[in-house]
Length: 290
Image 1 (tube, one colour):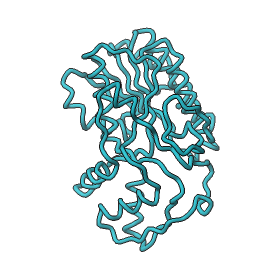
Image 2 (cartoon, helix red, strand yellow; image 1 turned 90 degrees about the vertical axis):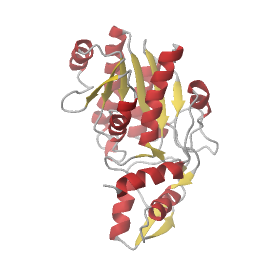
Image 3 (cartoon, rainbow, N blue to C red; image 1 turned 60 degrees about the vertical axis):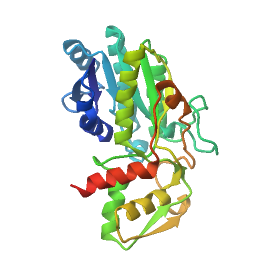
């Protein structure tokens, strides 16, 4: 299996690089800007044909949630039109696609973990463009699936864990929102899950065309809980103070509740999902070794 990983220098792409060696039957092509741009359809077609790509894990995305409000055209080019380019390119070679999406496709007004079949209602540009990307996969004539995830972090890139660690070492106190609930997700766990799904599908010949799956670590937390755990596990002496969303205004609205129900992905692919604090401890241990 020749696997193209787009957006390979981001959090998830970097974590896939770290675990790739464990999947001996896969041949990986790790690509990111400027070497390969999913917004350039002809460039994509040429690369996929030349390298006999039969599978893509799309980690490329415009993920600056607040900046997307002022850069809607660029966000749509990457999160919507770019995904459609991938779908069209893979349709020509009858290829597979795993596309990564987000909890931001929901409005967060619920109080039960979101199931894949629940109605989407994105509140901002980021969520709307990511939903457009989902629809490109769902409606495309390819063997493609969407995996929605939430609160992604890793030892790579810029994310909440690394920001809290830095600020916690610089300040005595930090204000963190406590009235938004979700689940932190270690990108390393998601990376393994993507490759395990491909391995499982290869062995069982399963075709999950057009399916949506939810993946995050297990459990529920607020950003406040998340920050407290980062300080505790990282042995950082910084007081974390709970505040309400209204006390920390942002350009884009965030879902107040975005916990994902993961029964479907566990059942279909026989996947075990770690608890969020256990995975956070692993990431912090990795960061401490740097």
